Amino acid sequence: MFQDVIFINNLTFDTIIGVLPHERIVKQPIIINLEVTVNTYIAACSQTLADTLDYADLASAITSLTQQAECLLVETLAQKIADLTLSYPGASSVKVSVTKPDALANASGVGVKIVRSIS
Image 1 (cartoon, one colour):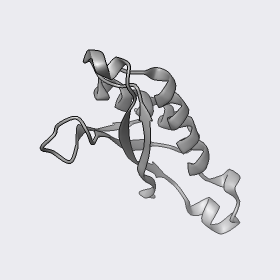
Image 2: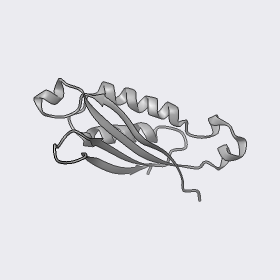
Image 3: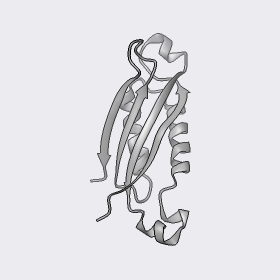
């Protein structure tokens, strides 16, 4: 059994997220980290991108999803990212964290971490 992980660290951009009135108008930075459990053995042997999860494509899809969703809660955004990631062939589980670095003046960030898997 393989427990290989493809990860994306600190995917950062501005988007509309939050419940407060100013958060519904002004974009703010968010940071997304994820770890996707996949079997990389076939791709390692073939050296073919089609045999693995394309992390550049996934990062682009997450960016588009996040900027279009305009979620109220980081929990909702994390779930949407998990659902999207698990729709990729070969992805069996995912750990997602969504951080709002500017949410609290005296903290470097607040957010949520979730773990989801295909049942």
